[in-house]
Image (cartoon, rainbow, N blue to C red; front, side, top):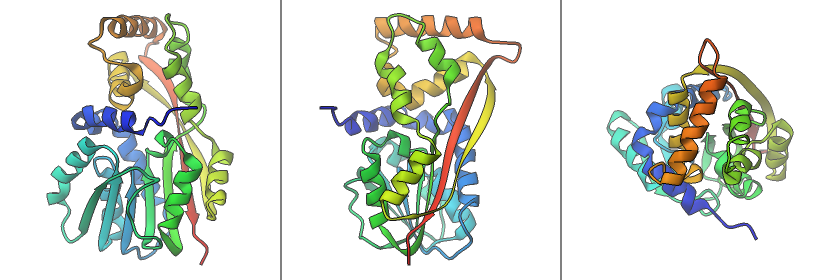
Length: 267
């Protein structure tokens, strides 16, 4: 039977929580675009699932000015980063809860809006996660999801598939985590929700090898391994060398796909 790795994932994000915002600026921009895609409305009670350091919550506050926000995340380090920002959020009652999506202690039918930005691809049980978020929604409520999409990061995947010893856990994580439009539709419909809009955003990015590897360390250190360990450091060194070989005049070039979804709970 597959093991439940929620604690491992949460622990990994706790270790890199203080570095997260600086390493993933594209995620912050994606959350803002997600929130701009939410239908106009009055959302007093908002649930942010996998809230991390709070940047998606801030985007919701900036646009909709809710009365209350509940942030849920299994990583205590990420919640600490969120708490450090709470002084910047005036006029909104913010509650933070350390929990996973499937066992979050929130009232059923209590929220007008549920958001989940760049967390869904890490959930171990996506059907159950969708159902748990749907239970928290009032009739007529909206859910907005952003996650990593199928087909992205292929250039990096090609490299790590060619550097021995092959890190099968990391290589397989892409296939296990990345999903497409039809799969997201299945999760939402299976949870009793009505999809409003589901789409994929494909971007070609140009980066330095160092910046790319730092991003991977911050978001996936729990899979890659401890860079201080000699065997991991040696493997990373070979990966970086291969990436530099394959870099072009604009540096390391790669595709990143983001999957967006907006759905409604039937009234």
